[in-house]
Image (cartoon, rainbow, N blue to C red; front, side):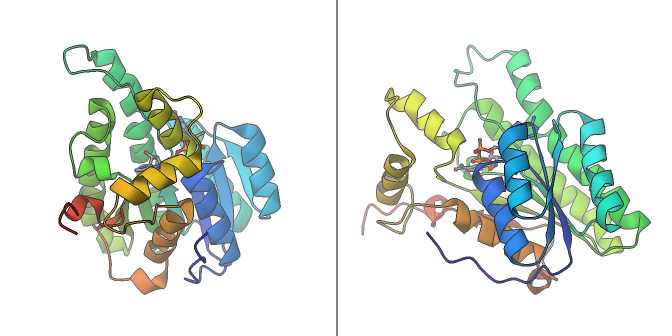
Length: 268
Ligand code: NAD
C-alpha cells in the first residue's frame, strides 16, 4: 500500500460519483483523511452507506445517467455544508467487448449514458452550484489510458473516455473565468472490480485475483517494473488536482499509468 498524500482539503466539500468501491472509495477515504466532508454518490447503496458512515460523510443513491440524481447529490452537499468545492466525476463502466463488425448503436448509447452523460451532468450541476456561490471550485473527471492508446479497451469505452477529455478541456475554457478548474485523470491498470472482471473475461480465468492483475500490470503494464498500480496511486492524483497546490492547473489530463502510454520498455 502507498502512503497517502497530504494535500490539505480542510473544510472542503467533495462529491464523488462511483465512490462506493474501487478508485472512488479510495479517493473518498483520502479526502476525508485530508479534512474534507465527502458525499458518496453511487448505485451500490450498502457499501456506499457503510463507507460514508466510516468517514463521517453522506451517501446518496445516484445513477449518474439520470440528471436529476446528480443534481440531487449536489444539492445534498449544499444543504449539508452550504457549499461544493470538489466534484469528482468518477463513476464509469466497461464493455461491451465486441468487434466493430458486431458493434450496435445500442451498445454505444447505453455505455455513453453512464460514462459520458454522467460526466456532463456532474460538470453542469457542479458548475451551477459553484458559480451561484462564487466558489472557485474544482472538477475532476475520470478518463483513461484507453483515451491515449488504442486497443486497451472496448470501442465504446475508448470513445467515451476520449470524449471526456474533450468535454473537460472545453468546459475548462468556459469556467476559468469563474476561477473553476476542470481537469482529468487517466489511470491505467488499477486492479479494481472493473479491471479484474475484465481480465477474467479476456484471459478466460474466473479465479484471477486482484493481486494477479497487479502482478501482470507490474510486469507488462508499466515502465516501472515490479510495481503495479493501486487505487491509492489514483487517489493521490485526484487529491493533488483538487488541492490549492494545483491552483494554476486546468484543462489538464493527469496520466497515472506508471509511464505505460509514454513508450515501451522492451529495451530495458
Ligand atoms: P469499479 O467498478 O470498482 O468502480 C466503479 C464505481 O462506479 C462503482 O462503485 C459502481 O457502482 C459505480 N457506478 C457504475 N455505474 C454507475 C452509475 N450509473 N451511477 C453511479 N455510479 C455508478 O471501477 P474503478 O476502476 O474504480 O473505476 C472508476 C473509474 O476509473 C471509472 O470511470 C473507470 O472507467 C476509470 N478507470 C479505471 C481504470 C482501472 O484500471 N481500474 C483505468 C482507467 C480508468
